[in-house]
Amino acid sequence: MKVNAFLKEVPSQIIERAKDILNKDDLLSFKVKDGIVKATVKGNYAPFYKVEVELKDQEIIDWYCSCPYNGSVCKHVVAVVLKAFNDDFLSTEAKKATKKRKRKTKAELAEEILEKLSCEELREFVREGIRYSKEWRNALLARFAFYADPGGKTLEAKYNAIFRHLVSSYKKHGFIDYYATMELEREVGKLLLTAGKLINAGKLEEACAIAKSVLSGWVKNLQNMDDSAGSTGNVVSEVLEIFKLLYSGGKKEVMDYLLKEGKKKDYRDFDIHYEIADSMAEVIDSQEAAKKLLAFVDNLKYGETIKAKILLKFFPEKYEEFVNANITDFSLADFHLEELIKREDYKEALKFVERVLSSKTPNKFHFFTKKAFILEKLGRKKEALKIYYSFFTTAPSLNFLWDMKKLASPDEWEKLKREAKNLLKGQELLTFLLKEGDFSAWLDTLKKEKERVGKFPDTFLNVVGMLEELPHEIAKEAAKTLLEVSHLMLETYNPNRRLYREFIRSIYPLKDYLGKETIKAHLEEVIQTYPTRHALKDEIQKYLSKIDR
Image 1: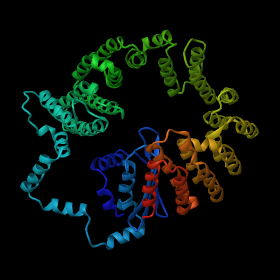
Image 2: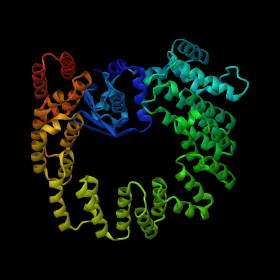
Image 3: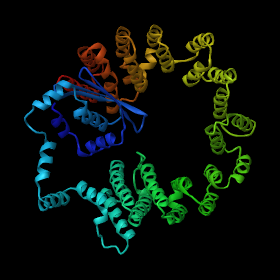
Image 4: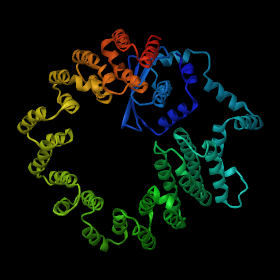
């Protein structure tokens, strides 16, 4: 499928989200080899998602993403496609082919037309767009809000009206659903971008009015939106950045506004008053402002760490006393310890962490790991190794193992490796053997653990990802083992269409080791094994038709 045809079938909102991925640098890695683009993209529900796109002669042959999206193509795949067809990432042959092409792209034609349009023609074109498209109207309102005149007597009234217009376009039956909330977040982000530009232009009053309308307007609507994707956290973080710029730019009264807002119930219901206090603690620049903020923080149930930040900066004589009086507060103790480590005062840090460990502080495990780190910095490696070893034997974990590897002598490490092979299980053992280059033991372990790996899609997919780091013959043998047990995830989980898609996604990368025909034959067998699962058959046939293109 040609890239233009591919993108034509993708909903406009998916393309916009894909562009956001590229604009925010959420594309973490990107490699092109033998016509296969392999990438990792920052995820919402996992640290990252794996994406593969197969290309041939400027066409998209196939694609895959490990994200849980149920549609035909997700924003992560689209982002990789957009990146792949960016001129900077095309192969030399593709670039030559592009140069030879006589026909211009739609983007090139559009740019050419834009250059020739008169102002009146362009205005008429935009008028038609905003008449029929909600997206156009919202984009215009958000990006050029300062030109609007909704009839308000003040700047705040003006931007409150604009914000209400934006909200109303995404609200249905008094509620903003999951996808609409994310769309609203995107438009509000444009409005805040406008506020940032106004600050750079010295128009602080107007920027402040935007920030106020966004913060208060968003919070008022929180009870009536599905914020499962975490849009509120993003919007609050962005708008508080605007307030911080305003404060640093001389508009000190914004702190009084924020502290007044933070006392309201709607803010407290969602813990936004903590974010307000924390952001202001970063920018206040006088003892007078510090006293106001301290009075606000004193009413917070868990404000000790924020208070410590303020005291450390403006009232250092009270800081030590406050820390000592609240040593059992986990967050505060950790904050003070990090300050000592930041100053490289490791001797004092060791004294403090030992005091914490002798107190009634919760989660002492965390502070034991900090103690081991401090001991390492002081050159007391044997003591640090002993702490990590006690943790590892109690609760085997790769994190402790890698810490021990840094501290152990070669002989000690050999002994620890033997223990690790006995104590680690499942995916962690496979990861350890892979990192140590013990590929034969890795394959033997996979064959012993294959049923456990096959039952869980996430584990299965993670193990599939390890194949890239194995010698080809061992990877091929491992791929056969994985394919053999892949059907187990269909038997263990409640069967549903989402699971079937996850199953297909999981075995998709195995084609690189076993070939497409083997994967196709396996999927045909799966259809025969589960003849009554019509949704499974449907999903497999969709995949088979795609893989044959």
